[in-house]
Length: 372
Image (cartoon, rainbow, N blue to C red; front, side):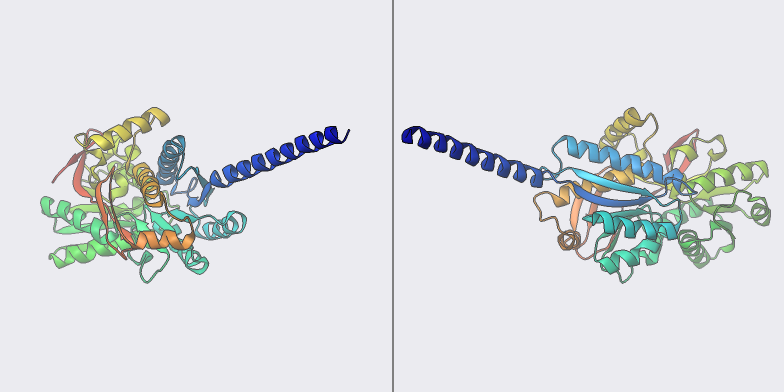
């Protein structure tokens, strides 16, 4: 009986140890597989939705590619996406709710107006905010935790001025949306154009406008009209410009380098600035474009590429690194080199603005032709 009792106790002991080891292994696996949470505020509705839905889709495709290969060090990326409705106040509220509920590793925002609104919250909570598709100059000025992956307005203005110089424009009208992005871009182009001895008339419109006929009438006598607006607005303005029989040249910001804009019949002949993703000879971008079109049944454009590329950058930067908020900042501050759908990118140490090149181009028969 005593021997039998000892045998039973021994078996029980082995079972307990096995359960303990199994539980430890399960716990370790659970910890290693815990998702890497990234808070994302996008305009899935409202006037910024035309661009931000594309950004969302580009990011989701990149996340699926990374997670299908095991994520980052065995941990999947999880995007916590909230629709800010192109409303800065809602974006701030959403940020605080994500912070309280999820405390993500970092945040991603889009558009100058939204990014400018949530940047102070990122600074206050000491968490990295990466703004994409946001060009307003002051966004990152004197900021510790706010970064940008998109050309600032000064960079874009240089390419826009190349188009104006090539066209020999001397009398320019600018139609811009009255927010951080529109004002900044309009002023940058106007200042550079006036310095080249041209004359400028600036005409603004308020967000959510749908009728631009009065604005257009005030600029009818200009040699060219430059549009500084979201793609959703550019779409409407181009239709109304054609209806007004405006005979001058039309130019637009990089926002017009978006498939649903440049595929419009009314966009034919418009001069824009665009990234290299539209160059069919750039094979890497062409392959990503094919995958995107196969997945979503729509063209791969500037904003989708902006979202896709930044997630891929994160994948490379965070591999084998300590995933804390402070370390994400330290990694970005060290600078990096990267080759993606926008070509080769060099982020200098301490630089908060990471830009990719834009080139003068023209919309011809629904496609972009570069004017380098």
